[in-house]
Length: 269
Image 1 (spheres, helix red, strand yellow):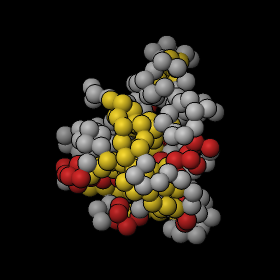
Image 2 (tube, helix red, strand yellow):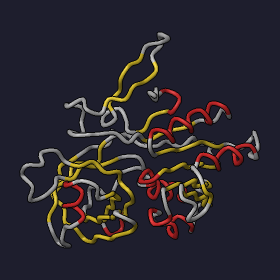
Image 3 (cartoon, one colour):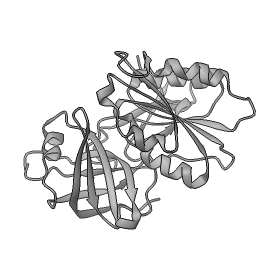
C-alpha cells in the first residue's frame, strides 16, 4: 500500500489548458515519487474556512526530477474556481497519494485507453508508465467540442490518437465509443491488449458492454463524489456485483478504488 501524507506544498505554475480547464503544478518531493496512474490527491481550498472538505483530483502527471506534481481539473464550482485563481508561490495543503492504481499485465502489448471529458486526467501519467514499459498506447478521447481537448500534443508524442466531438468540431462526429468497436473488430485475437477507461457513467456503461462482447479485460477509474478520501464518510460508495444474483455490494472509491475491474461494477440506469 502506498503511504499517504498531509503535505504543505507550493504552487509552482497554473495553466489554462482548455475551456474552464486548468493544470495546477505543485512542488512536492514526496508526492512526485512513488505514485502511479489512477491514484489521486485531495487539496484543501485555501482562504475558504466554510469549505470543509478537500477537493479530490486525479494525479495528472509527475516530474520526479524536479519534484513536481500536476493535477488537471474543471473550474465548475466555488472550490475549484478558487483553486483556478491561486497565485504562483501560494502555499496549499495536500493529502495524498490516495487510492489504488491501474495495473499492467506482464504480457500486455497494447493499452487501449478510452477517455471522456475530464476522464483524460489520469492518462498522462499512464502514458509515462507505458512508455517506460514499451507498451503501445491507443487513446480514444471524446469531448463535447474541440475547445475541451487537453494536451493533445503531449499525448501524440507517444500515443495513437482517435478523437471525437459531440458537435463534430474535430475528429469523429459522435460519441467516442462509436470508434472503439471497429478498432476492436480489426485487432488480432492473439494480441495482448486491455482497456483502461475513465469518464462519465453513460460512457462507462457502454464500454462495459463492449468489453464483455469482445472478451477483453478492462479497468476503470470511477468519477464519483469524494469527501474525506480515506473511507470515513462513506460518500463514494460504488455498487458492485454480488455472488448472489440480484444483489449488490458496495465498495468505497476512495479506499477500495478508484480503479476497479470493469466487469465487477453495477452501472445503475
